[in-house]
Image (tube, rainbow, N blue to C red):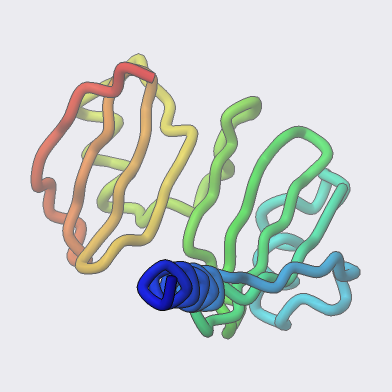
Length: 150
């Protein structure tokens, strides 16, 4: 009996620890509550598109911001308001988001493809074009390509 109780108790404790380690806080915020850099980015690159939804989220101890625009574009920002992901799945990605040397390389390698998503990753960028994921380092040097079956 003691063994069953102890096993059940330890299982509950482990479950609570697991949930608390992976929990996140989310709350809806106004555009004005975004960090200044995030507001400036949206105004510069998406001036003609309305903000549908903005959210502040604490995930693993870090604050992040998610913004959904009326054209379906999804933007993610870090706590300082620097963009970490831009997903223009249903529209054309504005000029100036992808570093110029990378944009030129993509245009040369894939002249008929338009990038629709960019993510900052540790050490560089992942850029999605139809059918492919392209990887570049921080200096804009092409690293590799992977087929995207999504």
